[in-house]
Image 1 (cartoon, rainbow, N blue to C red):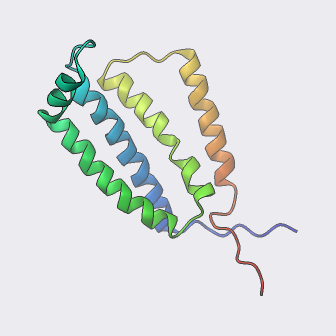
Image 2: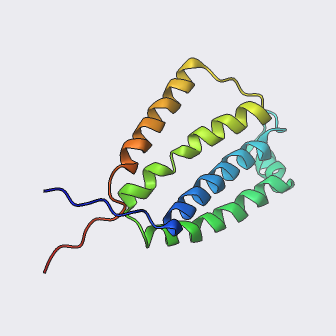
Length: 135
């Protein structure tokens, strides 16, 4: 017998959406923080260059926000339900990278995103929380 699917609480949906946004911000700001550095820069030059720009600090703030947001999401939903939703940030990062960083969208990348979307859709059809066992 299958357990009826309970509606996903709005707090979980908002937390998952915020996790996707924050992860996108983190990934793009990482890229922007090293974008002007030469490929052959030493470790010291890389660290110095990254610390001298604002993008590193934006990424750190987003990491802090992500930590607190993720704890709230996991207090309300199973990890096996919530974590796959964060894969949607692959779509947002790909889109933002294409538009703002002028990175190329290849057919293989688009197929990969389609598979991610299919997986997230399938996960979304399951209960957000494992039912409590009857005493």
